[in-house]
Image (cartoon, rainbow, N blue to C red; front, top):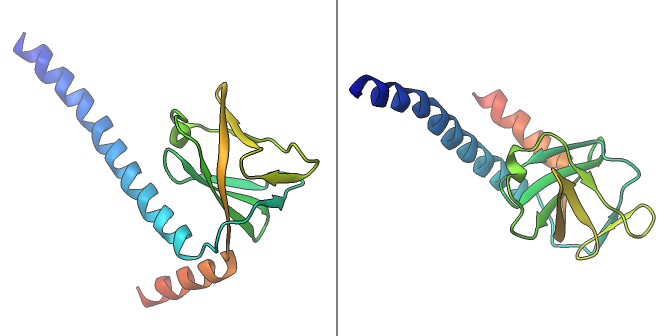
Length: 135
């Protein structure tokens, strides 16, 4: 019996460590995006979703073009956003994504976009390059 309990504990430990590392990484990435994010805006144009990155259970960054990045905050509960592999962003007004009217959809969930903030992605990349050069 002791062996079974010990085996179960050893199997769970890596999963707990991986989740803690992921949350710490997400928090670090969120802080970096927030540092370069401007004040909230009502909407942005998006013809297609170029790329996206989860930044926690209610935050994500989306690229509407190579260097056009938006920090989105979605309503809760939005269960396991940080673990999904694919998302869809609705656009009620043609190609314009609007706070409080549009949604982030994934895994049969429909999470309302509460806030949109533009990110100065070029400045963020330059700051990252300077930090890497110093290391």
